[in-house]
Image (cartoon, rainbow, N blue to C red):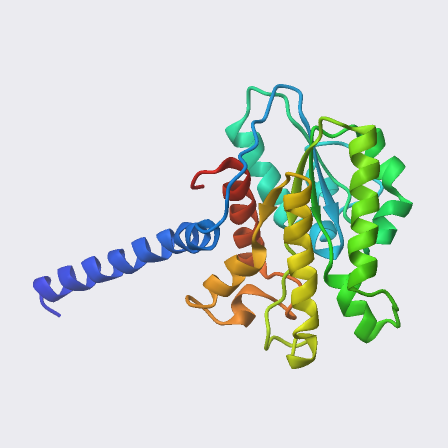
Length: 256
């Protein structure tokens, strides 16, 4: 190999590395681009709460109730998002909690809402829920419908706004990656109704909307579904980073 060819290979590899580095922000920017962003301002002493099912839970220690604690935050997108928020806002004394529980549907959030949400008095409340409200009708004998999901979600948010009128809401879109293990043609078009419902609810409650499906769909242009997701529902390590980056950009209104 000549010195010139070595130099050319070095430049080529460096360029590939640069493209890879830029890929995630570009994916997220493209996914969020069409959205009407409602940026959230974080204030000193804000309490930020992540709520949801296993995608949010992701192995957290349910016995640990401390904010900003690695085991209490789990090892998924909630931890990654919290880490960036704490790094960016080191001067604000933020307190960040994760209270997601695997398998939850909206009505199960409601059953534990007093303790796992209202008692913490969050200033910013992020909810990612909906995939089990559909998936468990196929696998666990759950008999809820899209109407059940919408009604239960409205009741939960009405209750939340009554107790915490100034809370800033973040509604995360339920998502799935078709063709990866559990997710096949039988999911559609019904599952799309749950995604639309989450978006509509975000609009109704003037909440920030996190377009996770658009982010995963765009990510498929870079790598196959199995790279981003383990079973069509639960994100891989790369998928967790995609979720965290999408959340941060949707909430802040700027690139991360």
